[in-house]
Amino acid sequence: MFTPALIYIFILIVVIFSVTLVIAMYSTYAERKVAGFLQDRLGPNRAGPFGILQPVADGVKMFMKEEIIPDVSNKWLFILGPSVAMATCLMTSAVIPFGSGLTIGGTFYPMQVADVNIGILYVFGVVSIGVYGIMIGGWASNNKYSLLGALRASSQMISYEVAMGLSIIALVMMTGTLSVREIAAGQPGGHWNVLYQPLGFLIFIICAFAETNRAPFDLPECETELVGGYHTEYSSMKLGFYLFAEYINMFISAAVISTLYFGGYNMPFIGRFITDPNTLSLVGTAFLFGKIFFFIFFFMWVRWTIPRFRYDQLMNLGWKGLIPLAILNIFLTGLGMWFFGKVG
Image 1 (cartoon, rainbow, N blue to C red):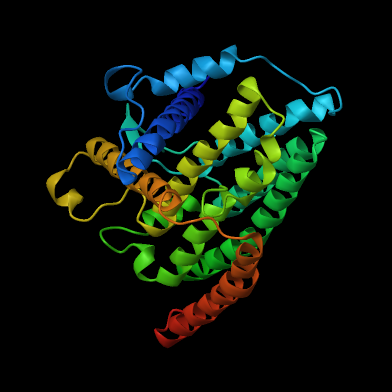
Image 2 (cartoon, rainbow, N blue to C red):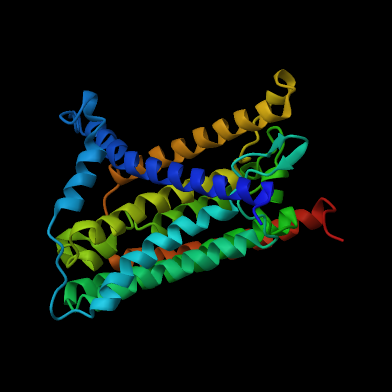
């Protein structure tokens, strides 16, 4: 039976997926425009006014390319790899609260697909599955460069997931919940978690760069060493899925960072000027997307500013730098909670 709540959730899923795909699509355009600005050139400007139809042209190009599956590959796994990568990055958005909620016909509907009380664990669980998409694709290609890229990706993502998880432990200690909705709701006004967890935020955002394979952590697809990395043998939309998944992961990472550390849909002083709850919720959603777009720009800014690490430097930073810092942050958080009487 289709209840109003079920219909609302279905509409919300379609809207979130559509918005995610559109943002990821135009992130490819923004990436090239930001790169052009930082390198003192124009960027794409041929397809449509100011080049705004470039993502459409790229999509048509991907669909029209010849579909090639190497004879020496494991065909089923070759197809499964990009499918897993795409599916896992889309699933992560289910627990992100994009607003406080809407009241329709006297019934309150949250702007969140699934409010699970272990939302952070869900995010980490789905993200950890995403590495299989890369590993399967690299191994199934039966190409040594693809396999090396997949090995780099899996070891990199697993290594930095440890530091990311430890940085979140300090945040969970402070907030006392694993629910993403409760963490977002617990940051009213200007009481954002980044003010109390600056070191945890720094560790988290560095790990987010590594998890999304963004420069300077893009060793899995380092073209100077691995031709194209784990997706060397892919063409057409299977290659498009891998490339698209990176931009979706960047959007989701920006959304998670904004929600956990920068108040999510909360903004200071807005409640003084807006009294209608629905309007306030929609304005909060707009503010959340503003924060997300800033972090997407930050991801791009860093990519076109900082050179790529060597692989030994990347692993040393993860195991010898970030993990000890994350453990220190847990200790300092516990010490601060004890000192200010927050333990008991």
